Each structure stands twice: as C-alpha cells, then as structure tokens.
Length: 113
Image (tube, rainbow, N blue to C red; front, side, top):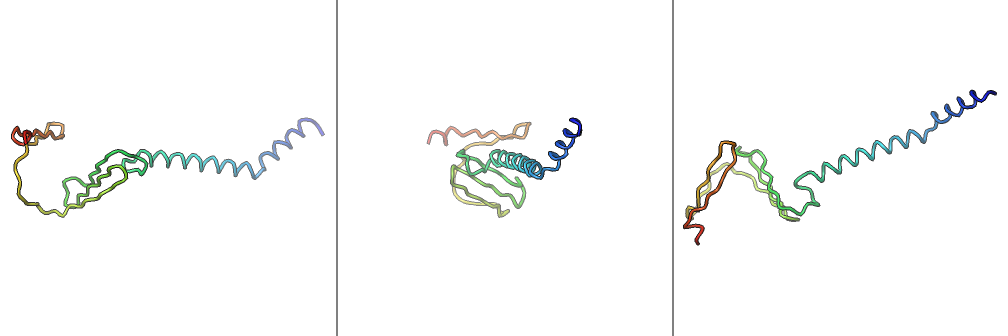
C-alpha cells in the first residue's frame, strides 16, 4: 500500500471518530453557557449584584410596576391607577427638561427643616 493511501485511510478514521462530534457539541454548550452567564450578570436585578437598583416597567401606564432591589432585599410595587391622598407639605418643585429628564429642586423651607 502506498504512503498516500495509508494517509488517506488515517484521515477517514479521524473523520468517522464519534468522540469528535461529542467534543464539538461540548464546545457549543460551553459557548451557550458563557453567553447566558453574561446575560445574567448584565441584568440589573441579578442576585449577585449588591447595588441599589430601581426598575420601572410600563412607566406612566395604568399597569405600571416598580421593582426596588437594595442588596439582597427586593420589593415590588404595582400601580392601582388611583390618585393617592394624604396630609403633608410642599417639599419642592420638579421640572422636566427638554431631553425628558426631571430635576427636583427642594424649597428653602423644606431643606432647612
């Protein structure tokens, strides 16, 4: 048998090896696991994050929800769509800027107390 024929037979045996397809499948699963891990870590509500985070879902809508995460403590609030009432005093003024963000300016009386 020629050297070229022997080399060709060895290549065919390597291509038919079932363990190679298993190794390739393991590689694909490792990539998928790495991507899922990155997604979990980038989520602001991930359980490993110690930061204080506030997530508002459906802002301004009747079904608005607000999730507040402070370290390991997590609270969820749902809007009832009703206007609240109570006693209190004016603490300041809020202005909406052209870019849509809000600025709160406390009043001098409220800030002094």
